Image (tube, rainbow, N blue to C red; front, side, top):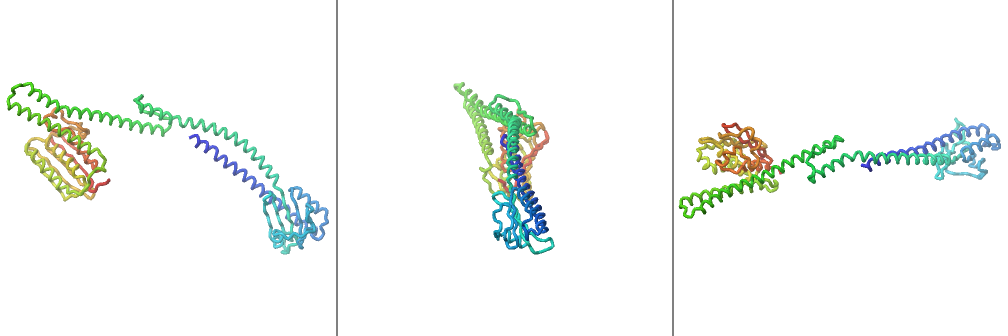
Length: 458
């Protein structure tokens, strides 16, 4: 943050200072060049008026030449038609020939204007009548830019002092602002550290800026979700312990009862051993469902996706469960509206639909019915499992997919089950990128609606 603020303060000022100094020098040189050129044109007209090219002895013209050269700390040379220098304010090349490129171009009617590497402005102007084409001579003038350089150096010195003072102020302001801007972030960091170390259970609340307030709110949501998840895990462990311990406790009681009787009748042994066998089967069912649930929790990469006939799959499930339904004289019907083929994990989906249909049978009434329907469109297939059972209270509908949740705990021992069937079914549907819904009326029955894509999307 400090570096960003320093860059914002220093870089624009440095660029502006460099631009202003460069612009000053360029404009000053251009202005002096234009001014010298105008003076030379006026002087060229005077040379023609006084016929100076024919008689260079005019004291007035020579005085003006010297004055103009001195004014610009430069030099003026007058050249006649024979390329001979008739006047040089430096008295170095008078009566000598000057066949230079600039002079030749001037005799062709062109004007030359340039800045030499050593800092002199050089101008070459043809001397001729305004309406004439013949060039009678050439005026060469040079002007020093030392004064411009001196002014630029003085301006640079002043700018450096200003820049130094400005830089100190900008740096101090940047340090202050960076501290103020980062302080809410530091408060967030400190709050996160307190929460992660377990020293604080309060929500994070940093409302200095909109951004920090939003970060605090999002973090609090995550913490809340983690707490709920932790509570759910603790409750799950507790439920697993209870469910696994209950059959073991029953078996121990039965075994102890037999051991306490020295000469127990054979019939009693058979009865107790039968009860122990049922408890072992119940324990095995709980462990099997737990293992199934663990598999459901794994990533979708472990799915064994294949193309399957959903009509045949449902018919096979109902065929396996008909013996259970017949014990309560429950009628089971499968209604298929069209043939359906989909990309699914047959094992997981079979387990899901088996649990849903088995629940519809277990929680049904005598002489009831279970109706399974299958339909599809261009994107999904739909399965509905409807029953005429006892129904689910409205307050329990939001919890029935939780692990070990039992709607009527008073009948939990009367109706065989582990409370994991619906959790397994939902997990199987979700790994297929599907959805499951439930609707129910107490005393009238329950309907589970499942929607699964025809083509699996990884």
